[in-house]
Length: 462
Image (cartoon, rainbow, N blue to C red; front, side):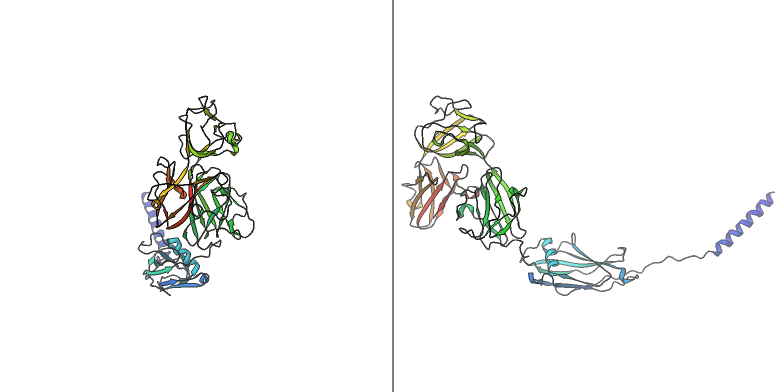
């Protein structure tokens, strides 16, 4: 039996050997290595214009890397990056099966601007080609070339004003009066297509942009004032018709406004919000909605402002433009104790006048200071104040001074330095006491002081 098994194994082994001898072995295919391509460019300095936008202004070509496969399947990646960045985050263009490619002026402009270039400023970039088989294997880097490219200004979406831009509207300090005061309602020109500045805006008002101060011929507004979110910015338009005014913010305060004519978008960023305390009284018919206000730019309940009080019949403070909220009176019967109470008597002053009122609804205190205003400065050797005159119809103080030479001046109340204003406030406003001298040129000038907007006091010089 043992011999039979051995014979069977021998036969099986011989059959297996014979079968193996009949199978043909296939050799593995190995592609030969290619050669790094050599890149050349039609130019290394490009300064295009808007008229060239659709024209190819730069061409690249490179040598054949001589891969073993059909060249039509090979891939080439053109990489363009800022000079010195080592192609860490390049802009790329993919080319399949060709040894050259061209770039239009618009395409090149967008690439350079995307890398951080600026309009009209030459920018240094580097370019190279990365070749590979169609499956991205065996990537070979070409030499790199240095390019100097000057981006051109892309035609803006909205026609820019050409050097000046002004803010006007019911939300502004000067309302719809045209021309507007340039000190407080003119934008700074950042560049030919961008204007920006910080302005006072009253709650729930509206405004437009003007390219020419004093003219209504052309303005910038919005296609529809009902678009959601416009109080924080959005698209605007060039308008020679009525158009739609831009809706202002819901909270009074200082706002940074940037107008970008390149993109046709304006943005609004809050800088400082004002809380209001209304001052209804006998002098204006006890109507909170139309009463002057005090303002607070802090969260501690401290308010201040100026009010022209023309009667001695008393007044109160209210935290709403109606009688539905909290109203504050004085704890004393004569209304002059300086202590507030929500169930107190009318607040009173001894005589009519233009008052600086301060109230603190946290500490429940208030003060009143009657003021008259005057001008003092280099023009009079900081002596012998020049009095200013108040106009109830315009709500401003006015005075005229003559300066023999250029210098500075300030406004102060009651011929002393307890309450005075100089430059340095936000949005071109005045700063109390610590402000700098207001510059003035030689000659005769009419100065106006506007204290009617609580928290935002400003001046004009003519």
